[in-house]
Each structure stands twice: as C-alpha cells, then as structure tokens.
Length: 164
Image 1 (cartoon, rainbow, N blue to C red):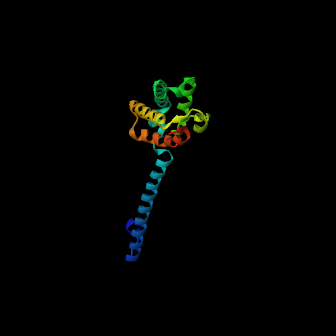
Image 2 (cartoon, helix red, strand yellow):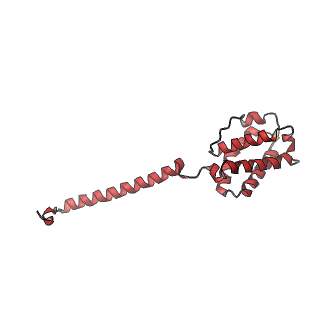
Image 3 (spheres, rainbow, N blue to C red):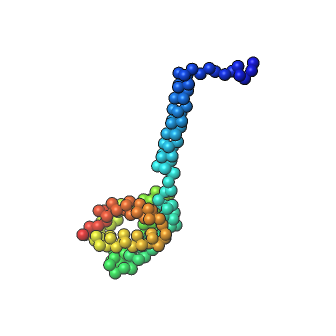
C-alpha cells in the first residue's frame, strides 16, 4: 500500500466540518488559556501586598518608624503615654502584616477594643495616616501597594476615632 492510497477524499461538506472543528478547537484553547491566566492572577499569580511592602521586615520598619514619629509628635504623643512601645510596635506590625495578606498571625484586640478609652480624634488619626504614608514612601514601596494598604486600613477609622 502506498501513502497516496491513504488519502481521504474530502467532500465540500466534510471540508466545512473539518474547518469548523479546527476553528472551534482553536477558540476553545484560546478561551481556556485566557481563563487560566485570569484565575492565576486572582489566586496567587499577583504578588501579595505584604511582599510589595517589603515583606515582614519592610512592614516592621514602616510601622516602627511611624510609631516612633507619632509617639513623639506633640499632637499625638498623649495617646502613647505609659504605653510599652516594644509590645505596641510588635502588635501593630503583626496587624498590618496580617491585613496585607502576610504570614503573620494577629492575636491582639480588635481596633475598637484597643482604642476604646483613648479618645482618639479625627485629627490624630489623620496625622497617623499621613505619617504612615510618608514612611511607606520612604521605604520606596510602589504607589499601588501604598494605596492598597491605606484602603484596607481606612475602615478602622470608625473603630478608632471617638472624637471628631
């Protein structure tokens, strides 16, 4: 038997069906590839926020410097009187790390409970946010990471601020 004997005669109808099959497979593979790319971005293809902020070390440096500044600023220092700064720094860094999808486990109080008796004003909260923003910039974190973190922290304002 010769190779030429193995040829299949394609009628116009079979040719159309074969073309439809090939085009359908190509479209299906393309859509499947696009869906796989989209789902990998949602489930881990994108860099987690805590890594974009410099990892656990980067977050710790940012929060430590932020707390050092607000604890000594005359506008906010009253809130830090008699506070064990080392423990506070560890707690805040862990909280931010967890909030940024990091590997940290935060076991501290809720923001509402931990700030309930402090009488934090809106101006004090806003200053803390401004200092945090400065420290994130100082750490050369990407603007998108800074904005993502600030967006995640924004809802805590209603739990922390007690005096407008």
